[in-house]
Length: 66
Image (cartoon, rainbow, N blue to C red; front, side, top):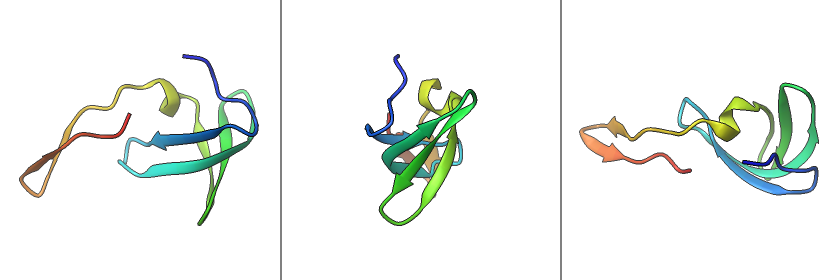
């Protein structure tokens, strides 16, 4: 998987199942800064390459976005 470049639009699901969607502002050696519509956030590079397992929430099986 290639890394996104500044200006690319990305959608990332973090380990806490929070989904961040926005435009990559900049990238450093450990992560990238994503500027979203409601807020901005630094995201570690591991979040881009880690597969996400399905999670059971409230007795209902949910599949994390990839």
